[in-house]
Length: 442
Image 1 (cartoon, rainbow, N blue to C red):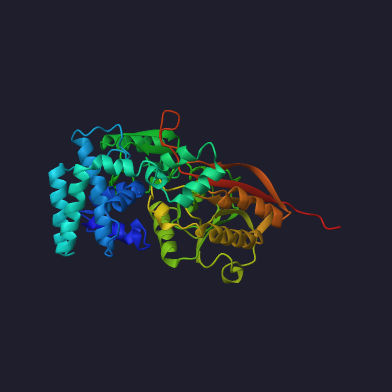
Image 2: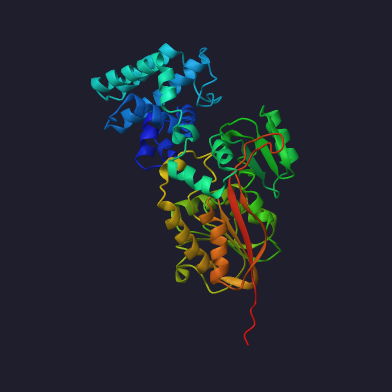
């Protein structure tokens, strides 16, 4: 019942993160597991729902409940011996509850009663699930040529990736629906990877060190209960995101700006890496408060850190006129590179969002460039795989600012599932690094 409500929230334009806040804490882990699983297969679920019903229910909860029921029923049929050679979805994750077929149908109908959706909805849910149980192959055949059902992303998203990455788009889409591993960035001012691994294993958590300051957990868990969380030994940060600060040349006492800083992962990484004078800037005061909380937990707060809430583009609202030696510009974007951990992103975005976001990013970069000292470095960061929010954005910066000298940087990092060569996998990111040249006037 709670998962269907969360999915209905996404259908209404809200994120799963927001929806989970309304779920009782005792139920949240299970609800999160089911909801995330559903979002990773939402293209398939929606396609099956369309096969079952020519007219979709006006009640978003009922509509989502049917789609979720079809997914979970198929998983139950597979786990109870149905031939899986033609399965279009991945097995249930370890955190998802398991159901017997008859129990699932019964519980799905009872959930309608509990949610007080009415007798017609009860009959509809029962009829659709019973039909799928009898005619599963018909449902499979009906969607076999449906790209949205196969790749579980909107059609426009699939088209965009196919255009940009003609030999890699299928791998990107397949990777994007695989749940990620949890990676911790160790706070080098408080601990190291070997110490963190030792404490995690002592507490019964399977893990491994990825580097001297990165640790990967094998299984999902409640982060706040892990050893070292309260002590500020580490932060959760994907392996791709951890590469940002290492691209910058940092020296003691530099004046550094972390633009669009919330929730503060990269702000903390900067402060862990050197003794810097850091300004963390974000437009949302509420999100900026999370930066303060995270820095306090990591024991990185103090007079050397300034938090400012303002629109980056309005220099008069936040800049004191003193140039920055380093700017980390982690720009707002479609977040197309992090759908492994936030699968609702794919269903919340629209094709029209891409040009709008790219325009906003260019405006922010133009404002930030004015605050960068000659010889200073600006790192352009987006958690996106779309060229408009990466390579094209970087090219535009160079065209508008002749004094922007490109330096060595990874460019687009594509999503990657965990495997022998890359234990943790990685999210999709773009990194472009620039130095502001001093142009002599003649």
